[in-house]
Amino acid sequence: MAKNPSIPLNTTALHASDQTIRLDGIHLRATQVAGYTTDAEWIEACKRGERLAQRWLYEKFAGKMYYVCFRYLGNTDDAQDTLHDAFVKVFASITRFRGDATLETWLTRIMANTSINSIRKQARRGIKKDIDDCKIADESDATAMIDVPTGLSAQDVLQMITELPIGYRTVLSMYALDAFSHRDIAKALGISEGTSKSQLAKARKMLKQRIDERNGKG
Image (cartoon, rainbow, N blue to C red; front, side):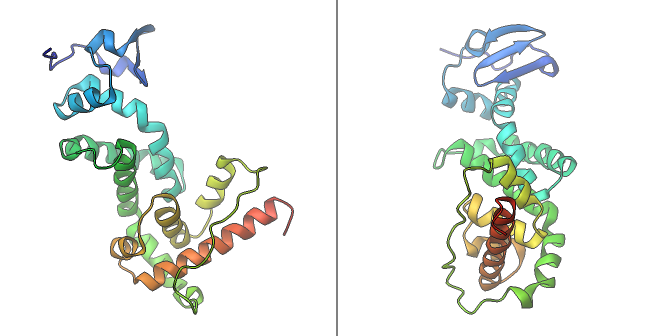
């Protein structure tokens, strides 16, 4: 059945959570408004540039994507600005989304790349500054992932990550949380793969120390 390509709604008053639309206090199922019942249908509507579908996508993922930006940038204002810029890129490139990865994974990579672009020069300065201290004898990246005590919340750990020096924070976020390879990190930040591995090891060590201190083991 053909879908109406233009939904005559004032999107400034529109909010969506999953597939529930609230318009000026009136709660409607999204399917009652647009007739879409699956994420795939909403995505296809986004590709056609339908405003309601774009609003659905933003409201469905903006919360999670904000924290991706916040992990890199470390403050609310910069994270919000970057989130906005990243979603502009999302809507400009949504037609290239083919479903090879999940939509959330695809969005996360755009958020991370936009955040990295925002801090590239500052991050590189931070990495270069500590380069001598960060070199390790074995660059095979054999360091273990950090075990987070059950007494700490995800918010606690996120806050600790944002408080790391910018070079450490950037590499740790890219590698451990957003699944970039060291080759990808090196290319994005203009550093060597060995430096990326060194930064990761140093970041994990510092984060573990802060977690231990918070947990009374320091």
